[in-house]
Length: 313
Ligand code: RUB
Image (cartoon, rainbow, N blue to C red; front, side, top):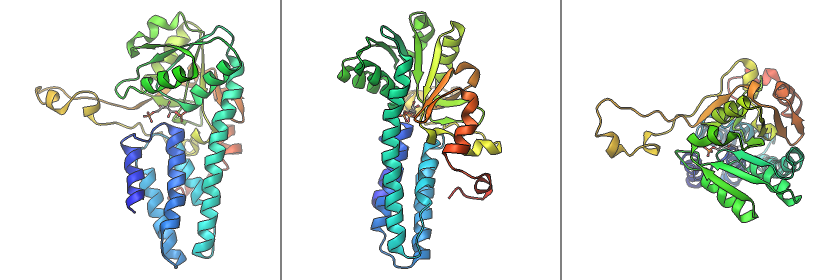
């Protein structure tokens, strides 16, 4: 329980962050937790697994990769605890390796859209998006990246560090300079925390601002997202919840306390309408956002009837 709570805490505090990493960490934790349960009764075991799944899913509400990963593992079968454990082990390992391969494949597919000499603008830190840049660079294309700071958590600093270590030339800009620099950009590449059935993209706050500025000057926006970032529940009309984080990420409690009429709003994500997205690059191919439903239906393997049930696992 201690380690389970620790992993949940790390996801919540963003020590483990980024939709793909969160998903892999949750799958891995469910597998390890299952092996730590010392119960012989299968019903009791299943109850404990369900509680653990619920705890992990509750840590961050927006990244759909998290419930999708948890569900992939919670599909386990077994009449006995030993069988259940081995099924969980297999499903979790499968999810993790598929996820890692997906990021690599997205790099290969997405890099075909990057031309030699391109300037790419990116936002926040997305493993799927940087995989495209890394692949293009590896192919010998000379690229320049403009990376936003991505306040308040400054994930842009992670991006510039990663790109720098690969030898990719990168400029760091403040978030409000996005429109100013858009004229110099050839292509915008970003990640996603969730993609809805109608092709809207939910990603780090400010993503829609980049997409809007790109749209204004007819620059292409590519979203790099594994198939498990697509949200099955949006088929039922559900909206993706936008996480609102603590005010202390924006201004210290002490400073805020000096004011009587000031509050802080700190949404972590925003929604980019599909009209501003040219292509979603997944591991099964680059698709127009209008095809999001097909990905949910054909690649996630969710039946509509399963989604109608109370829980998702
Ligand atoms: C991270 C973020 C990333 C997506 C995709 O937000 O918005 O663009 O999660 O990342 P946070 P990846 O830092 O709040 O988790 O491609 O790595 O899954």
